[in-house]
Structures are given as C-alpha cells and as structure tokens.
Amino acid sequence: MNITPVPGACGAEITGIDLSKDMSDAIVADIRDAFVEYHVLFFRDQSLDPAQQVAFGECFGELEDYPFVAPLPGHPKIIPVIKEPDEKTNFGGGWHTDLIYRETPPMGTMLYAVETPTRGGDTLFANGIRAFEALSPRMQTLLESLDVEYNVRNILQTIADRDNASSQGNRSMEGTSDEGVLNETPVHPLIRTHPESGRKGIYFSRGHTVRFDGMTTGESRPLLDWIQQHMTQPALTTRFHWEPGSLAFWDNRCLNHYALNDYHGERRYMHRLTIAGDKPR
Ligand code: SIN
Image (cartoon, rainbow, N blue to C red):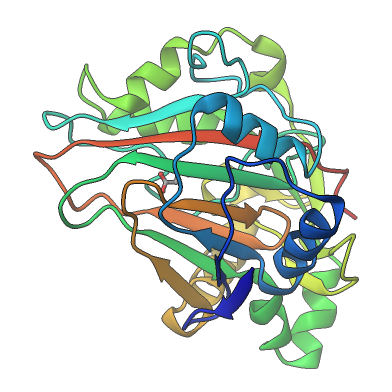
C-alpha cells in the first residue's frame, strides 16, 4: 500500500490496495493513521458492490442511518446520491460537514463513484485545522470561546426553494419523516479538538447554523459569514476528480466539503455511507 499526499490543503491518495478484499488489522490501522494525518483519503480503480463497501466502512466504526434519503434496497446503511441528466440541483452542493445538526455527528463519510459525468462533478474539501492555525492568536482565542447552535430545517428550506420537482433535493425532502431530527438543535463548540490527533480546528457548517449560542441571529451572521469565507479560501482546499470506481473517505470532524454541480445533462451516481462519531468537544 502506498500513501501519496495530493496537492492542496488536505488529502492523500492510497494505491496498491483492493478494498473489496478482507483487511488485516495492520492495514486498517495504517489507513486510519493516514486518515487522521491527511483528513481525506482517495482510492481509485476499485470495484465495490454495496456489501463490500459496507464491510470496508465497518472497519472504521459503526455505520449510521441517514434520515433524509431512502437507502439502497437491502442495504440500509448506503444511500444513493444521484443527479439525473434532466435535473438541475444536486445533493451536497454547498460547503458543509455532514450531519452537524445531530447531537452526535458522524466521524466520517465514504463515497463511492458508480457512474460519473464525462467531465465535472468534482468534490472540494476545506481543511478546518489549517483554517484555525492560519488565524491570529487573538482571533483563535475569540473563536475558542464560541459555541454554535445548529438545525437542519434551514438547509432543507433552501433546497426546497431552489429545487424543481424531480431533483435529488426533493427526493431528500420526501424522506423527512423523522420529526426528532428536524427538531434537534444541538450546540457544538466552534473550535473542536480532534479526538484522535488532539489538533484544534474550525468545526462548522454555515448552511446548518442557527446562531452563536447566547447571541441573536443578526449578531451572529457577520462572523458566521466571515468564518465561512476564511475556511473555504482556495489555499485551504483540495479538489478531487471522480472516475467510476473512485472512493473518497473523509473526516467530518475537521473538513467541509462541496459537491460541484457543473455537469448538467449527464448522470452522476454514487453510494454513500457514514460512520458514527462522538460528541464534539
Ligand atoms: C455529500 O455531500 O455527501 C456528497 C458529496 C458529493 O456527492 O460529492
């Protein structure tokens, strides 16, 4: 197995491994170390059926259900992420980290490409640890004193407002039967200490924010917007180009990601699973 850092602010490509095979504990430990160091790992030329993707995902923790999209038949932990040629909106088309609106958000997401457009459909990643380290000491101290309240309704409304009837966004809305999730308003620290590396990073998802804990939405907005702009500046990002058989495994505890929507008229079809995490601290 070879681990090669990719250009940009995070990420490494791993070659020389077949993810459809059983993994030894030693290989899993090496992948986990690389995951903690590089935050997102890229694998190419894989051939994974849903059961094999689940088996690989389970090497890193317990798999979770996703509340807003129906899973693949027979594979309750995998959701399809699809944009059809006639659709205009996509899933994940804005900077975010997955499920930050839960009390205990997932530690990682694994996305496997089944079908990709001939060009476009890349995913961007932004490094919250680098973003924190790039701040002045005074700004670091200020941000460390803040907690953020989250809720999923804002983003669902944004998706509903911009979607047409057949889009993935509306397919997502159809699955919104879990009132419990809709009503969760967790408060998480803005600066999270990574539970495995001990490094501090900005832990944030602008589209899901309500406000800073203890402030009004109006007071919160300017600084929330600035943090978003700071964290996602080009120098703090990495871009991944998908091909059929590519798999990305990213760390939701310190990254934002953004699915580009620049391939209208073509189909993109992915299998996605999430791995349970811990309460952010
Ligand atoms: C997601 O936000 O989980 C999907 C990312 C992608 O499709 O590239």
